[in-house]
Each structure stands twice: as C-alpha cells, then as structure tokens.
Image (cartoon, rainbow, N blue to C red):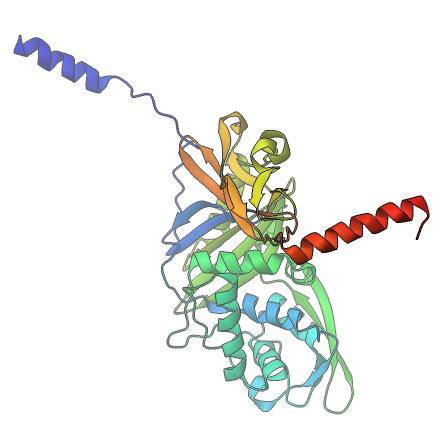
Length: 388
C-alpha cells in the first residue's frame, strides 16, 4: 500500500500545475546595475532590476536641469557666460567667458551635446549660484515623487552624495516628456545654435544628439545619455508606438544601447495600453453617490486620471474594475475631492489604482442656503411670467 501511495504522489508532482500568468515570462538579460521599464501614461512598472538602488546618474542629471529651465518661462532671455561656467570640465559646448547666449540655446546644448558648461550657466542664470539651483532641483525631485534622489550639481559630474535610482529617473523623465518643449529638444537628432562672443560676433555650432538610440530604433524619441568613470554608461530612453510611450532606464550598463532597445521592443511586443470603459461598466457605482445634509442629494464621481491601464496583449477580457466608494457622504462636497478609488485587477492582482473624485460641488443645506435657493426659484418663476 505504501508503494502505491508513493507512486501516486510522485505522478502527481510530475503533472503540470494549471496556472494563469499575467504576461508570458521572458528572461531579459539586462546587464545594468539598475534598470526599469515603465509606461509613461500610467506609470506602471513593466520590468525592473535593482530599480531602487541608489547609483550615480552621471549626465542623466541634466533632465532635471533642463525641465527647471524650461518651466522658468525665460527661454528667450540671454545670459553672459561666467568664468565659472566656462571652466567646467568634461563634456562641454566650449562656451567662453563673456559670451552672450539665450537660455533656449543653453538647454539645447545641455541635452543634445551634454554640455556641463551649459548646466552651470543655466544654474547661475536662474538661481544666482549652483548651490541655490541645486536646492530647487531637489525640491522639484520630491514634488515629482523621486524621493530616493539627491542632487549636488546640475550636470552629474562625480560628487559625494550625488545619486538617483532607475525608478526615480524614469519618474523624472516621465514628468519631463509631458512638456512639449522638452520632448522636442530631446527627440532632435541634429540642429545648430548660435550666440555672440564678448566682441558681439556671431558664432554657430552644429549639434548632434549623443543619444544613439534615436538612430537605432525608429520609435525612439528621447531622452538623455550619461557616462562617468564612477557611474559607467547610463541611458534614460523613451520610445512611442501607437500612442503608447515607454520609458527605459539603464544605469552602469556597458550594453546600454542594446539593453535599452531590448527593453523598449519587449514592452511594445508584450503589452497593450488599454482604456477601460468606466462610464459603460461602472455607471451605477459612480453616477449617484448619496449626499446627506446637502442641497443636492447625490453627487457624480469621475476619475482623477484617464482610465488607462497596461495589460498583456490580448488579455482585456481578463481585466475587471472594482470601485471602493462609501454608500453616502456628508455635505459640503468640493469638486475634485477624493471620494473613493477604482482598482484595475487581473488574475487577483491589482495593476493600477485611480482616485475617484467629485465631479461638482454640493453645498451644505443650511437655512441661509435654503432661503437663497427658494428666493432664486421664485425670481426665475416671476421672470418666466414677465413680472420682473
């Protein structure tokens, strides 16, 4: 009898176990010390390797420098290059002390030529000093959600306690790529810029983007390279296909071009960006939330973001959405106020969560509001009769 029991157990273990996987498992051999692939619209992480490990970011730092410059709304203003900016080592635009150049041209040279001199010139122009500009860089990083990042300079040259993570850099790039000016600069392969020297003579410089992926992958449209002895070869890359943008980060990766291309291609081949039909599927759950003590008895909810979710290709039938909302809320209710959440779930795994917020205000029912509404109704009625 024991023999037959053992035989049964062995055969049972040899049988295939029925499992459902969200995506077909693929062994990606990414050589980076830290890497990540995210969907830009939803922020969903599609692949990661040591994505929260703090590493030297090299010139990918300049993504933050550029977005601060662009958001200053001073791109057409000109600045005079200081001795400090002109003396920066490493990759430069070869700026000279006393030259006059616009902030727009500095940003172009910063992102395409990876000019360290441009980074310092931007910092000094916008904040008065590099140290003060770094404060703004770190403040912006926290606002974006890059909480494991610390900048010490605007260019990424090796400095103690200057670090970021693959996740944080992807998040910063996701934010930056939403800016049309930034997206245009980092997707440009070749361009030329001009400025004046201290004698007023015009100089022109042709620039070729350091991001080789723009030539290697048709869908590539950004964003920034970086290399130092400490950081190794780094790349933050972006590609867009069929209205879906993916962002990849590879840090300290000798095969950054091949690995980034593999990540982006794998993402497009494996996943779809799907818009969930909220109004069609969840109308009963979100259209009439009861409001107590309010002038109106119900309030309609809407999603705080577009209801997109990244799913494995061809698996939309397996996606469900569940709402988490109270049966009733008390007035006053303010437009945009978070009331609940909607969870997008596949195979018992939550892929994305979006806030549900009030679509309109609902004032509290007070005596003053009651009298005001009553008088307003009477006035409208008299007006329709032609009395007033």
